Image (cartoon, rainbow, N blue to C red; front, side, top):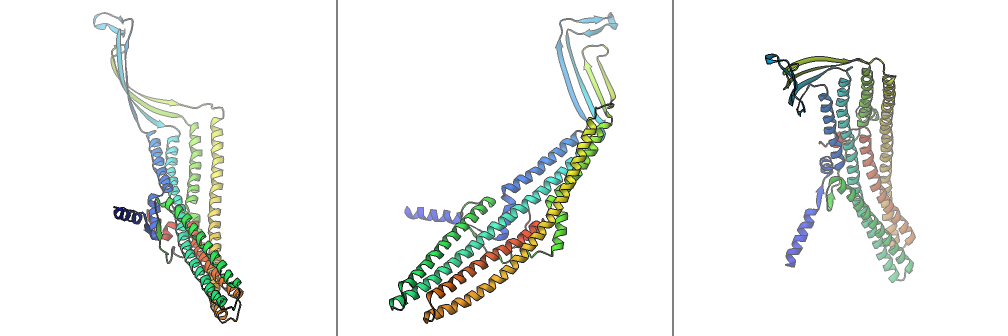
Length: 425
């Protein structure tokens, strides 16, 4: 029985562990992330609003009726000329068609605004998807980085243990004091503390990744050789950001909505014309028991106490605000790309220098250990070279992560992250 329980637990643990490649994680984010789903739900809302505004210019047909019990029954005339004007039990029904004919094109402007609202909602999806992809990619690469940090700290522990063994051998031979052994022990504990910190950071990054991907349990990741394609030149991305970035597109559409709002408010100066047609059937024979009618009705505004002027003025100010918002969005997009490229160039330089630093530190440590083993240098010199090597390894891991994130942010600043990582909805 215990064996069966153990087998079941191991199977459950195996099922809970999920292996994800970089591309698979990004693809899953577009499918299950709640932020993306909420943004997509805005499109049906905008579509429903568009259909509602379209319905305002389509004909409407209504049926109504009533039955009434009166206290009196009143007629006039005799014989075939008799007419009932107040039946004791009265009833009637009517069928009415109503069609708006003209209302200053206000309904048309509102419908055009609603269509633009659908485009704004779709641009919102693109912006949310890019933001989620950047967050998921950052957390995924953070796990990759902490895995590398864990391996580095294990290597650093091995270096310190190697020094302790050598120091202990010298101590047993009476060549050095206990201080050299204690220094090696201190280095081991320091590396073990950093190992625990790296594990903690991995758990935190994994927690954020699980939340974005709607997963539970352990996640294993791969180290992608090239997470994202190298970005093109700066001017190309600046041009794309100013034209295609979702927030810029939304600002441009908002300006179109503001312009339509001015035209819509001006429409309140124009007359309103409607057409009605109906058929009436009633018990009362006065003036007739059944008849139909058709009517054009109009309402001409003569004096509105400045109400329309105020609405138009307000709409013009909103247009000015939207124009300024569009200019700001373009400026922000342009400067975001330039800042991202500046960071990318800095990380490229730093990564190259850190690799060179690591090569020098490895050579220094190798020579320092050989000298210490030959008792031609002290444990302090070996500890210093060991620390330099450990720091160089950490720096390479950190700068590798920074460089990869800088490339992602450069694409994100241009609003082109989805294309860069090669994922589809």
